[in-house]
Image (cartoon, rainbow, N blue to C red; front, side, top):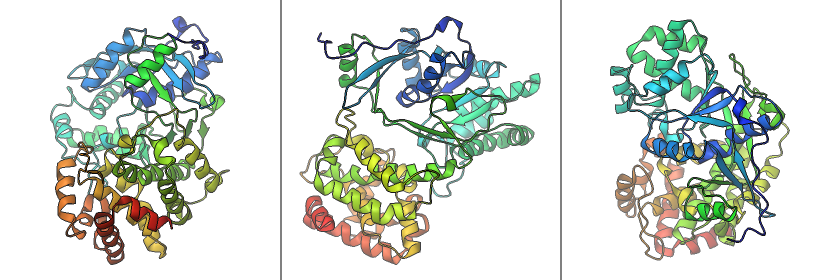
Length: 481
């Protein structure tokens, strides 16, 4: 094994034996371990937050596998920063335990009911909040929610477990913990509150009122590109001399912006770069529109042109030309001002991050779950541009590229494996929309009332027809000019 060119792995710069738990985090995926856990690790290295260690938790089968892997290495996470100037690896020690993953979540509920836990945080993915796709509100009819409402003492969801723990704390006279979403959702605190209060109303309206009046749900914006772990990432950990089945790789950049709403206390994260502000919504819209909208913009042309990696897509002038024009003409003009931030400079930073060859993020990952991401990351910009009478040529083209991708074949005829929870429906609709593009815009869960917008129908239909008759490359050439 050749490790001569790699720096030594940084170990926790503090004695973990003296740490005590203050946070339960549900959803121990790569993002959490490269983001919140790292910020806390940095703070602990300064000799602070020793009573804020993390207990990992989960409610899914994959969480049980992660628990086994992390407990086998004393809950240390390998985090490798993929800086083009030189990779760096560290062992993050801010998590000190992982709660047993059980069907009724009894162990998780008991842990959260403990008075020492003052924050319960979550990364359960953007699609894990039981949001009605049509209304955008909490969906009380979702099967898992209905099951938790019928059996509140043996919940299957993270929200049911949180609610059961809050109920136990109320009964014991213990102050509630703060519930902090770390998922990439607009108003993620409000969304989480709606899910937990909405669930409570189904079985215990008085508890719902108590939660609404007493539990804090701070909004936050999180950002760090963190690819999925596969053979490449495990091999990289081995190059550092580590035998870790679940290493995390990530870009050097990270950002966390949070409302300072923690009645039960919080770590002094501001000392390690976290921004506490009442203006989270402004940072959040900037990130969702410019970064996530940018990801959606480069995803589907790359997928259709058989490009595997994001940095390779950024090396294709037609794709960067599409990105630059869509962002500067149709996205950035409708993003409100952000404190101490130049939006065009922020976009330049985003382009550099997308172009980092060390991250090796995949186009397929960016294409994943378009039915959930398009209405959050693209349609709001489209709506604003239409309302202002501005250009929608680029955004409508992005939407047409998504439709074309869902057909299930690249321009070269390579089959595209299912890549959306609603893939079968989307593929069928895409195939019918080839002859009648208006059918695609009938996706009310994505386009809402824009499904009847005549201008959108005209531009989208023209782009989709040309994608089929001329191909992605030619359409991009004509658009970029």
